[in-house]
Length: 385
Ligand SMILES: [Zn+2]
Image (cartoon, rainbow, N blue to C red; front, side, top):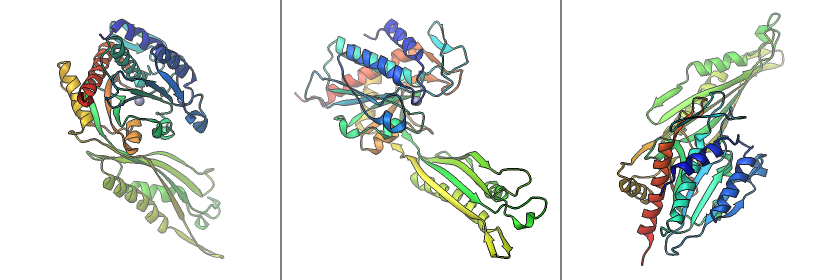
């Protein structure tokens, strides 16, 4: 069944290959070799050219042994956040971490390794299965760019799992929709010592807007953050321009839109309060908002077939599956918005996006076994005759 030694070797091999976003060329080559060795046919799309990266998304297809079984999708991402130039791995028993100068990249190589092992065992032990499609995406960490540029029309599967979240035997069925927000405030420049009354300070206007704004955790479903402020040229110039960048997320689209409007209005109202009368007439502060939907929400009901399949798989292992919501987006959000029935399965990554990131190899074994049992349950459920 699940081969712990093989999983360990593969995990250590993959995490040792640096694969920052847009620089997934080496890991993609390595994975293509592994997948070909497992009997898959490989296609690499043009997403890499579109995002300025080294490779596109990798789509591997494994032919099923039972044609009546519907195809099933598995997905994980190849890129990692930084720092991750040269990864020095430390292994203590089943715990794998780094020397704390880089992330480990268990996000998302834990997911990749669990998927590879599940497919291997499925085929080695001749468990009947349908076609399996495996998408290994690029640039998940840079706004889900790989998934956004992936043509889901190339998939036959309509149901599946992304493996890209912490926890074990946990299934993320709800994740927020997110808006990316850019507010530009334009005032009027003037000499700060000689004639400040002829200016409109964009910094002051932006400050007023932000001071009265609801930010942080707004309720159990909704968050908002302003993360970047850029503006001003010099201490002796009344600043003419400030750019404020932020985001808001919510499991509820109505709340997302209400919060977005709240933030926009705060800037609008602050700008409207500032005018100056010069010889040429009245000058007003201006304000522009750029609002981009970064991704749509994920919302899979607990009675959905995919939840039932993973649940059956967990029971086979004597484990209990929990479904939960998360505050983060993943490729599952993009795939779900394109009509796939997909949830995000925990794969044992821990303290991700930090140099303290670690993985317990036992969690990878459990996850691989859970994917295997889910594929088995899927074949048993959908095979008629
Ligand atoms: Zn991830």
